[in-house]
Length: 623
Ligand SMILES: [Zn+2]
Image (cartoon, rainbow, N blue to C red; front, top):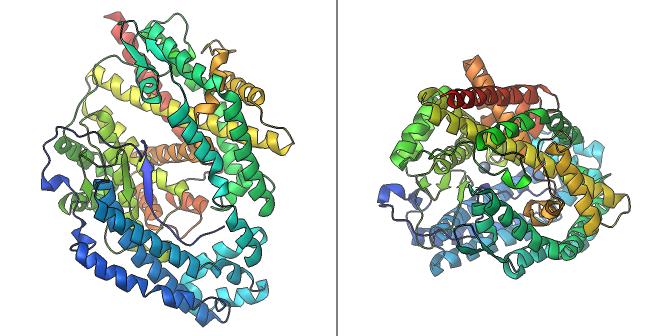
């Protein structure tokens, strides 16, 4: 279960598998990342690869020796982490080259070579956990407290805390055979969705005919024309409806897979199996759903405001994606984005600002779209001895600026944690990762609101804040709730048929969007939306979008209100990397995620944004 192999490439917002379209942006060397900090050239990489390959033999020799003595275990962990660290650096270089140009066969070959080294290392260290767990608890205590192993205490504890959920080497071997098989439902989902679904053509009000594929649905659900929006929704979800039995059978098989692993690893429920690996208590999950549901009236109030601004007689589910303001969104060049970033991170102090300057000066970022370059944005912090790299497809729009701040938040997190922690604790858990990134988005909103008092601009920013709450807090919590309910239904012996999935989804839709309260009218057709959501195949992952957002929002509010003391607590959380469990990391940062305080602070911020937006809309109406 627990793997000591880590990579820290966080992918956000977009799919990594779509290629970016070339952009007419003038590109200079300064806008491309400098990979020479990793290796001066490909030849040096090749030499390094040869020497990294020699690091695997010593790890192989540890087989059967892991529990021999504290000293042996310490030296085995030393060689293991050394190999891991160097292989990660190799892989980092190859990955960035492939991302920058997927058509480069040499880069592809390097990536393949690095991947093979990782696989070899995984094989060489495969008995590590089971050998460590096989040490009887009383004896293990003397190991853990031995000075030779003091720097690995948390690593060891993290392995043995899963003792009762870890299988014997022989059982694990059999379970490993199921690994490829277990991806079946995800593969079927993607093949059906991206290749086989016959999305129909829709004729819009303008007379134009478009095929209602996912990208077009993403575009036309924001159409200003009510009939066009509704048509898009109906054509899109109508297609899913025609295939709902296939999607349901596939969903059911994915949940059966989770049940298989739950039983094999002896967990009480699927959700506990998913949370157990990262040591997140179930109460964090249930607290999140309870709290978000309790604050639904704020969502409803926002949606009512939207309805008013848009002048709609009733608000339908197909109206939700309309922006709060029709005014043109602001645009920023990347030079302006850098200045915005400088101003935004000021409350985080001198050191944080100097990391930003370093990232600019040392060219950590690959900025613009280019031919062969991968789409979306990510941060890769896996080169422990070097520095993080960021990939973007900067497009001059507001989202690009926000993405830049987001990815830089990840980079600063990696910078602090690798500078402050030994390699084995340089990686931080996902639960904390998206706090560091969305924290910066919060700071950006605060900076923008205070920097420009033009009512149109203010309403634009407030719209961004409120939409974030709608999509990241309420919608993701709703998904997490659905995931939980469906897995529970299955565990109680139900087959997840299309009817049962539709009903479960529809009931939740009405509950979250306040149908009984007269807020949103939801058509029964949209009950099939569950079939469209890819995240359900990443089991029990989405709840972290909500918890991270709530945590970062509350932390940003605290830092801005309380100053240096709260800021230092936040930075110490970044510096702690993976040396603590997720909940303890957040506690160090100043928040108890098992309690209600983060929700109270965060939703108060939402209410404030709502009050300001309502006042601006009223003032506009009076003109
Ligand atoms: Zn992220």
